[in-house]
Length: 250
Image 1 (cartoon, rainbow, N blue to C red):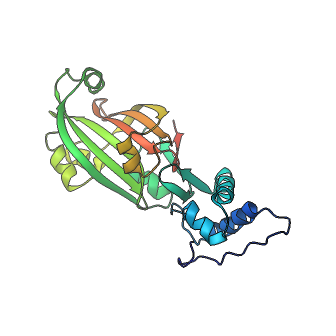
Image 2 (cartoon, helix red, strand yellow; image 1 turned 60 degrees about the vertical axis):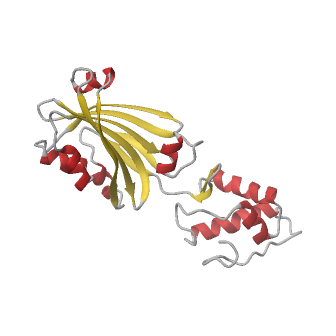
């Protein structure tokens, strides 16, 4: 949308005609977003670039951007820039929650990436949730899940290592948690309980989720059990709140 960029329109503001310059800039950018010249999630030009394009000062541009943000068309992330707002995904949390199914239901393409796999001794709280003695080995898998190439959720999964000795190798070959558990003899599992909170992200979480540190993340803690009721996984997930709304289903 900057001058010379594909899809940009000439800057022509009607001065001295009763419509504030910031309002004209807001209307111009809004029309370009509506026309699809900049796709959802794309970064908009900087204040300096827009100031040059429209031959106005930054304060005028800032006022226009604040109006677009107020209308829900733009999200402004301090330190990262301004972006065209994306459609918010309806992410259903129910007894049987599967990321790929949720994302495909929204006509998006799911993707998973395993970022880290490690083994560690279980601390007291985690050991209690998993039904283990404190200090018993736990497999920790950190997984980034995306929809149409955009990060949606960062999940840290904890599995009892003694029950699933092959899990780390399986996840290294295929990032699907469901497929790995199925290969270990757990073809189905369900959520026993989910706790939902919100907080600001850590620097690493903000970078992985491609969002500002000043924008909250939705945090869920889920305990998953097999058909016999034995705990197979405790998951701590951080959702990009600007892209996801959680729908809790019974």
